[in-house]
Every structure is written in structure tokens, then in C-alpha cells.
Length: 188
Image (cartoon, rainbow, N blue to C red):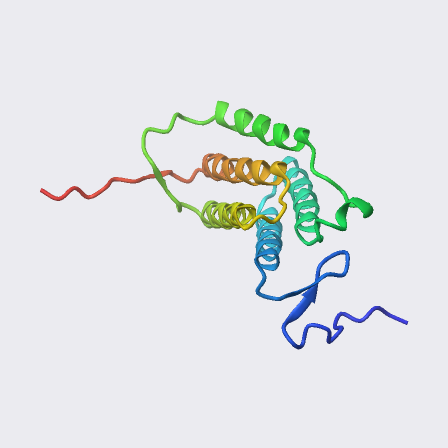
């Protein structure tokens, strides 16, 4: 028999974490891993916009790490030690840092803040960056509510948002799109 996508178990506003613990669907943990899922979907979208195989492979790897993060956030921390889940490694964070440094080396220095825009791909990457920052804020919020979040998850999301900012600049350069500097209006 085929697996059914609907279970009807959430019809009353509750869902289960990995490990079986029931929580309301508006639980901070659900909101957090739901935002990571949204981020993962947006990464898939920008991956579809890229023609460059190097970035397509890289973005698929990032999607894999986001599934790892989502599974950690969706697990009851008390039951997690008994479960065999993938985990994040410090090397995943170092990878992002190295890619940021590599892309930055070929970019002109920033002399002002940059407005998102200039090309649909660049704007899309900036949207993804904003979703990533929201996911990071939600993880911090979980910590402040004394819910376990692996420190590497927050570090990874922080670096990923920096990676996405740099990727937007790099994509703008590759696409021949002009960066739009922010010129604040000054009242006299």
C-alpha cells in the first residue's frame, strides 16, 4: 500500500515531534523548523535560477544541511540521544566561510549598504537571506525559552545568511547587474 500524505492527526491543531512528543502547531519549535523548511524551499528556488553547476551542487549541499538542521529542531531533545539523526559539523560552517572568502576576493569592496535588486535572481537571493535571518532569530528565541538548540545550528544559519549576501553580490557581478548603493535621504 502506498504511503498517504495526510494522517488526520493534526486536525485538532497538534503535531508530533520526532520521538513522539505532541505539541501545538504554533509551538516555537514548529515555527522554527517550519521557517528552516521555508528557507530550504527558497534555496531550491534560487538553485533553479542558476546555470552554474558549481553553485547548483553547492546549494544542494546547503539544502542537505538544512534538512539536518530541521530534523534536529523537530526532535524532542530528551529523546534525541536515543535516535540516530544526522548532525551538523564544524566543517560545514568552515565551508561557508571559505566560500564567502572565495567569492569576496573577486568582488569590488563595499563602500555603502546595498539595496536588494538589480536582477530577479539577485533580488531572490536577498529574499532567501532574509528568511535565513528569521530562522536564526527563531533559533535564538528557542534558546531564550530554554529549549535546546545546538550552537552549531545558530552559527551555521548566521554564516549562511552572510554566504547568501555574498552570493547575491557575486550573482550580480556574473549577471552584469549593477549593485544599487543605498543613498540615504538627509533632511536639511
